[in-house]
Image 1 (tube, rainbow, N blue to C red):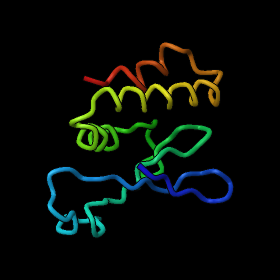
Image 2 (cartoon, rainbow, N blue to C red):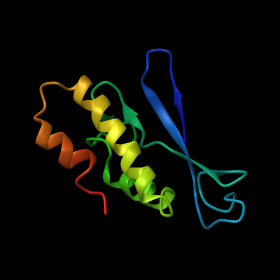
Image 3 (tube, one colour):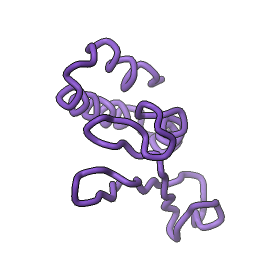
Image 4 (tube, rainbow, N blue to C red):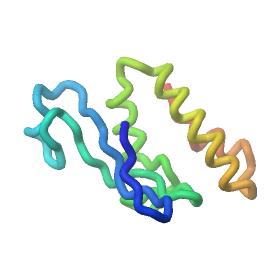
Length: 108
């Protein structure tokens, strides 16, 4: 996964591989080679969704992540755990249990 960022560190979008598509270009928002652009990346350091303003990962991004990591659930857990560590450092005021549920509690 690649995150496109502006100079001040705010992420604008993430490119996501969409499984199950031969070229990916037949899906709205898709680029050649099966890469889809999503507007639902995190805005750091406050960890809100750039696409909808909800706490990140928002419902849409969770759905996208489940599809992207369908065949690699352990990798998804590791990725989300790394996000949890970063969010914990960025948002020290938020209780650890709340962040744990937000970043890991939704995983299958």
